[in-house]
Image (spheres, rainbow, N blue to C red):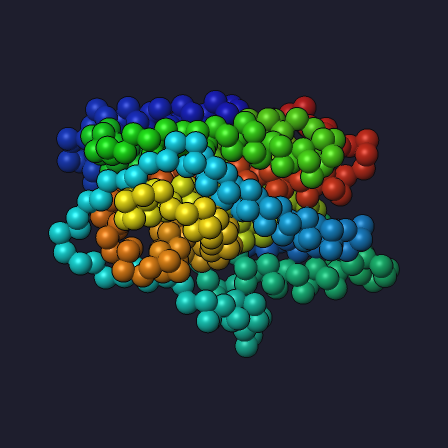
Length: 416
């Protein structure tokens, strides 16, 4: 059955189950038991899958002399998307400026602790390459580094190397098949994690949000990003020859559900790989690099949400509309901090907002923290969902650059 059918059905079943069984104690126990298992299963095979797929992709890119092109295109997409969406957040706020409600925490909370970027060097090079495979479970960066080194040497320009290249390339196909299998079963995983999400974040919690114009701004941000901004950026960068961008949206949304409701881009990475290859027509040698690399450096959707919310909080604290220079700095800061937000998985949005307030005024964060925690479930799911769409577009963009002219815009007949 198609994932575009099974995933929405799983969401509806999760919502209905939590609505009907929310007062039944065994239901809480079942979800508390199953949810951690399901989330672990969702990323259980991710790291070896990414290693083999990236290794195969780099070797293939070396063969076709497209390595630099794909890496440059992926990084360029991440930077441009972050800047575009961050300034879009500022523009949406200026359409109808608003202030946000401040809610007291009741007691002073400790400052959140995030990833220490002074230690990021060990994610690139450790004392032993085998340590890279177990160095971190929060980022794909260490595995990508090892794949880059081995894949670079795997270019089949000598007769003795070609058998190894063929074997690795075949294993890459195995990983793509495995990603498809996991994506099909992912509907059951989504049923459990969405049921837990709806159980923890009820309609009553949503109705506690008194900031009407913020909700309107968020709705405009999501619609504008999907209908205008990402398709327009994709069209400009591909010379409007990359195919229909709205097929990318319709093809990738099951992976978006997985990322948003699991509160983890890594959980949605395997569906992103399967769906961008099967539904969007991305080439394996391009998506094997662009998808995992974008999970590390791209949180453009979270940057948009962070910009919109931060300017709203600053308006509340100042009692007036902030000067345009300050709003521009907030947008630029959101784009910058989003590049490192992936190292705080599940707290990407808090990381960006905290860093923005730290840059503006450190004490201000403690004032807005109470209301931010109320808004966080909604903001985080929107941010991660947009992040997943950005990754899907980025994979399609890098793939189109490596495709022959006759293949550009071609979508496989068989879809998931």
